[in-house]
Image (cartoon, rainbow, N blue to C red; front, side, top):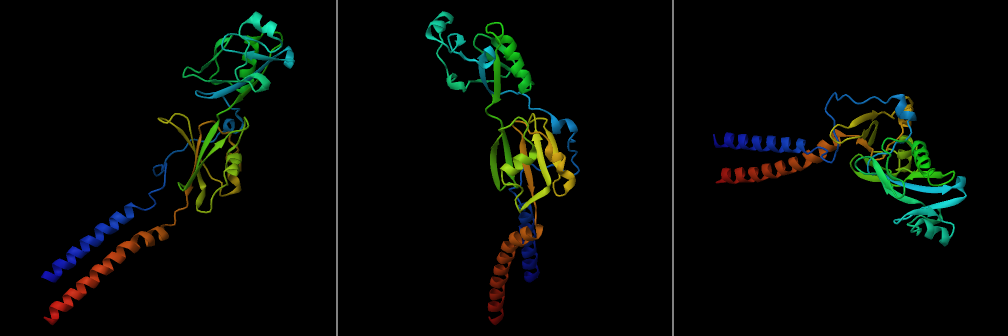
Length: 275
């Protein structure tokens, strides 16, 4: 009777340890989606859509007049063209604020999708492409300068790339129309322990994001990988899960503990038998 109770006790210990071991399988895996999750479709517009300005973008504006002949410096106290101190005094404070030398000034997009530019005031830029943004700024500058010419660039366009939960990197978008292929190429591609058939692109509001599933395991996925990336996108490459390795690794510890218990019990049982 005592022996049966001990066997039952050992059985419960083994069962609890096994369940706990299974629960720890690949705990580093992130951003799991439920079984049969309905992903968003990669439509043609995503492959050819130009980048559009969004909240918290940092826009660098380099502005000229006379179709690029003279550099426009918009300072804190006013605005003007970097030509002479006399003309600067006439127009107000003409000191360049990070703007001289053609580097331009940086304006952060506010929560209401606007930027505040000296002399011009508030300009709604959210949702505009770079060409549309340049045209609007040129139109507003045309009230103060002759033939203004504007070059716009986003300074802080970033993509967050997670490789199987084991490595992560931040990719700076250098071009307006950077594709998923370019991002993967710039971050080392798909690692050997990752699943090329399950690459997730997560975009938009965190409360209701758009989630796209890209399969690059075959040549058929090449068109989806040409989707244009947006600032703030998250690229997550699912790991290739080798369940056999995980089970052997996790169960190995359990079996080692069980072996020790059995050895101790056998020694104890042998001692009682001799007595």
